[in-house]
Image 1: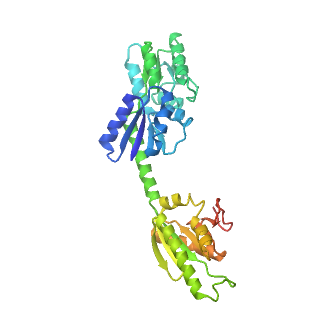
Image 2: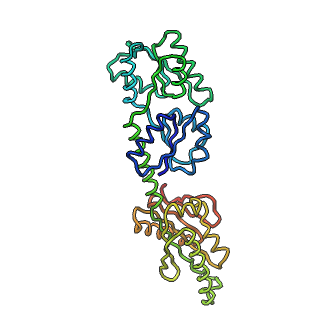
Image 3: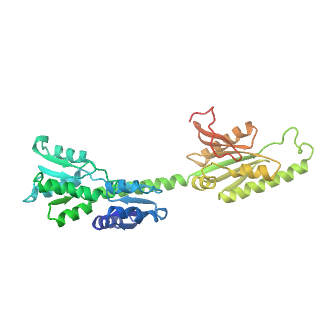
Length: 355
């Protein structure tokens, strides 16, 4: 698993060390920013090369999400109660600062209020100044710094709590007491583990066996094949050739069942990519254009290959009963998509089935 890590240098290094020590199946790739506006540029080009992206905080995640579209799973490391407790302990142990008067730019201030409550501190015993500006504008860091500076210089607070590396650096340069909320090793570990499990689940889903049942439709009453068996055999051979070409494209194993039925086995990912998520099953159109026959197709999903096979046959039988030249996608008995006809670009829902 290739995991992109976005954040300031010290936190990124902390995450990287935990991954290298405990998650040997993950290959970390780091993206260290100087300012918020760097992040979209840093990761946009590399997104297709990664399996997932982990942001060092929710604010970074929210800022980036407004500017580029995620094409792989994104996650951020939450700032939870344990991280806040560490910071509040540092403040309480300091000689010049107190936890009863602080300013905070934490994205979720409810966590801060809950932490005070868990410490047994009543609401009338402390005063917290918070900023409501959302991290979607490029001047967000300037606004947050001005907010903290204003309250400190006007003696409203004894110190500041921030989740933002750039804010922490700027305030420290002005000798304004500031404490940064960093993710604990345990929170990092839990978040990375969750992402790894999700990735493994995705791989498992994409590797699921999908069955494809194909039947060459029987010639109609007035078909040219009615009195010409040789021509019918030649045409059937031509249809079979197109079926095998399709099977090759979706890397499927092929089993011929009887005189005019075929059973293919591929994987979910390969088949859905080849058919553009079933928006166009081109085998229907190819057979119709290049032969004198049509086919009925059923695509079946299931927890086992046997279940997928039965679902595919069910879909194929439904297509055949409608006169052929169509396909049904059978996820389970309660979710059947179709009929999909040659050249269709949209799914049609079978009115007899519940979706």
